[in-house]
Image 1 (cartoon, rainbow, N blue to C red):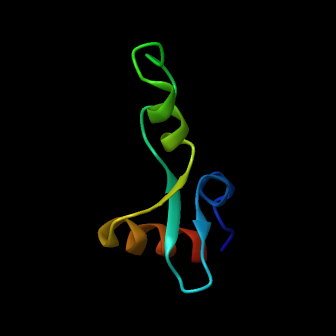
Image 2 (cartoon, helix red, strand yellow; image 1 turned 60 degrees about the horizontal axis):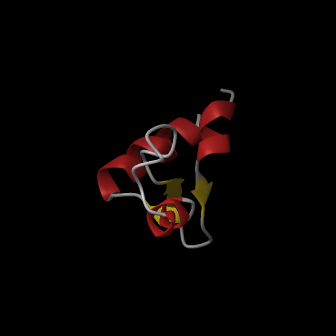
Length: 61
């Protein structure tokens, strides 16, 4: 089975097996948000457990 390239581009897997993703809400309505909030959303955030299981299953296929 091939890996889904779109998912491998959107998420990172750490050495310990955690999956990191970007924060939501970065695309539009940025004028309302403070610069501090926009900067915080650029960081990689660890995803919750129920999403990590799904993403790992998709990546390994």
